[in-house]
Structures are given as structure tokens and as C-alpha cells.
Image 1: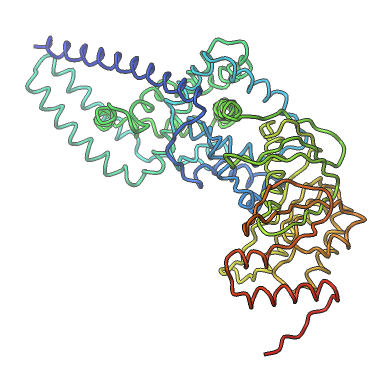
Image 2: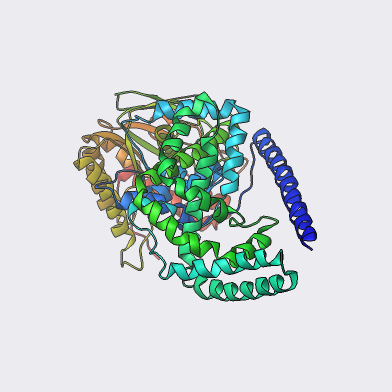
Length: 556
């Protein structure tokens, strides 16, 4: 009577083994295709989930001078992050996001990181082994898996022994099957009903906790896989894993069970879910995992960070491989930024620019001529240069500095801030960094445009002069031509311009030395066929003001 059951188990194991081997081969082929094409597709992750490690780290630090939220939004860094986020795990996503935001001007990490990028970019076999192990961990939103080493672990489950006793019921039933098939199967069915009731009754109350704890167990299990890799080029990381997994070895057995069928999307996840319900695996392992990980939080942190480091490093290597051109930046002590053929990372066909920007730069030019795009490209590349040692240029050199911008300012209805109040609060962040004596690359687009012309130009000049005396580099873009004369002793002038051909406007988006001498606002009204009465009068008023520095009174 027991032979059919044994045969069924043997067939099931064979099918699972063949499936896993076949699936690994398909996954490897996918990795190779992605590497060859430089393109990939991943499910979108919740931004709040990706930011959890950065939030935990920032909130537990005495001070934070990385890329703040306003700068991040000004530069559309979420899009930059998504473009390079080839990570396979939530740990990797969180680690990479933090890496892009956590500027360390000491640059102590650069040399070691660069070595890892080169290794993973060149060693296909090693890269695919790492990717395969990481892909099995996968991604799950809102696990907040870094909370365990920031003192925010889940609470332990009460009356855990009850779940252990209930888990023994199906074990006893299976033993009984070998002696009394009918009664054994009956008791197995009854134990499944009882445990299913307990599982779903308590699962809702611990939904988030189970979600987080199960992923933490999967992380440990993945660390064990990565620790077995035999390659001298990553021995530093495998040794760290081996050392820090030792105090967590009690969980390795549990993590094998907890990690199976608990990532979602697998063909056999439904079967594994029934097994988890039958033996109440989640609840039995819950307390053990929480207790051990909390007790050995430093070891868990090391495992977590090594996994994140390797995952993020593969993503950086992949990003570099997908670029048509990039360079490894150089760092100097001079307060200047120098680059050749710099590109904006979010443009598919960017116009490149070459510049040598000193301590203070004022960029003028007409509407839509390229001032903002150029300024953002400089700021983004300054961040990438210092965080992932990559710049989208043929050459890039700079002084290590924090980066802060004031560009896409918006009024804040909820806080009651007008546009102008929002502007001066944004600028105050930059002033505060310089008051603290910290080197900063500040990028400002249209100073104080939320107020009247006279006060805007006066206050802009005063702020720009103050910034020129601080410890850092300032780049200001403006429409106000008056500033080019006011600031010519402390700011070097550059400009963008346009041409009109057959009644249409054309931009080459190339930066030029000197102040702007062109205006196109009124010309754009003409291009869009505004009434001649409007455009002719606008031109007369502008010419009169430029000649006499005084506005004419309009008469009906």
C-alpha cells in the first residue's frame, strides 16, 4: 500500500529537479540576452519601499549631507535610478538608491568599488552565478528588511508552542499512512483543515511581520549561496559572508523552508503554499528568526550589505555596459569642474558639451535654449562621479563636493508657502551647507523669479556675491541679462542661443562663452502667430527699455 505513495514522492522530486534545472538555464539565457542588448524589463517597485534603507540610515545618523529630497526631485533622479536599476533583489534596489544619495566626499570607497565593477563587468561566469542566486531571492515591496539592524524588528509571536504541537499532527498522520492508509489520509485531511484555520486566523494579524521575517530568512539563505562562490576576485565578500553567517547558522535550516515558494511568481508556489499551511512553517520559524536576527543584528547587517553591494555593483556594471560613452572621473583639489563631451543621462540622443567651469558660473540665454538641461547634466554627473565612479563624458574632473540644487521650485499649498517663500527656503539649504564650511556644488535655476524685477535682481546679485565667497562651486542660470554686468567680476559668463530659419526657431543646445545678447520671448509669440498688434508693441516696449532703461506708460 505504501509503494504508490513512495512512487508519487519520487516522481514529484524528479519533476521538481528537472524544472529547477530548466528554469536556471532559461534565467541564464535571459541574463545573457539583457547583457547583449543593454535593455531589461522589471516590475515597478514602490518608491517608499526602495527608500526604506536610506530612510533608516539617515534617521539613525547624527547628521546627513547627502543628496536631499529637493535636489533629488530637481534632477529627476528617480528616473536616473530606474534607468540603472538592474538589481535582482529588494536589498539591491535599496542599497543602490542609498549609494546614489549618500555622497561621501572622502571617496574612500571608490577604488574598491571600481575593482568590483570591472570584475563583474568582465567575468561573465561569475556575474551570472551571482545574478542567478540573487534572482531567487527576488524583490518584494515593503519588507523593510534593514529594520532588523536598526532596532525596529517585529514583535515575537505569543504561544508559539501551540503552533509547534499543531505542526506535529500532519507528521503523525503521514506516519500513520504507512500502516493504515485510510485512517492516515483522513487524519492528514483533518490536520490540514485545523492548521489552515489557524494559519488564516493569525496570518492577517501578522501579515506584515510574516512578510518581513520571511524575506529576512530568504536573505540569509541567499547569503549562504553566495558564500559558496569560489572566485578569488570576490573573496573579500564571500569571506565576510562566511564569517557573519556562522552566528546565524541556526536559521539556515529554517531559511531553506521559509524561502521555498515564498517569493511569488513560481509555477509551484501554490503547492508550496499548501505545504506551508499544513506544517505552519511560517509561524514556527517566525519567533526563531526574529530572536536570532535581533540578537546577531551586526552579523545580519553584514550579510545584508554584502548582498546589496554585489547586486548594486552588477547593476552599475550593466549600466556602464549599456552606455555609448562614459569615463572614470578624476578628482582634484581645485574648485572647478572640467569635462569633455558631457551628456545628460536621461536623453536618448543628447547634445554633448565641453566646459571648464570655475568657482562661479553665470549662464544666460533665451527660453528653451538649453540652460536648465545643461545645469542638470552637470549636477547629475557630479553625483554619479562620486557615488558610482561613472560620468557620462569622455573626460570628467572635479573637486569632491556635496551637491545641492534649487531649480524646480513649487509653491506649497498645504504648508501655506507661496512660490517666493518656497524659493527662499530652497536657497536657504544651500546657504546652510556653506555656512557650515562644507564643500558644495550649488546649481540654481532662475533666482527669485517669484518676486518683482527690481528686488529680484538686487537680491539675486547679493546672494550670488555671497555664494562666490563660500567653500564651493556655484552655477546659476538666469534670464536676467542685468546680472551679467553686475556679477562680471566674480562670475564667468556663458550663454546658450538660437537661430531663426524661415520663420521657425532652432536651438543647437551648445554652450558658448560670454553673456547672452539675444531675446526670443517675443519672437516665439510671432512664431505662434500672435496678433501683430501684440508683437509689434511688445518689440517697441522692449527696445525703448533697452535704450532708456525705463518702461513707457501704455495708453488706451
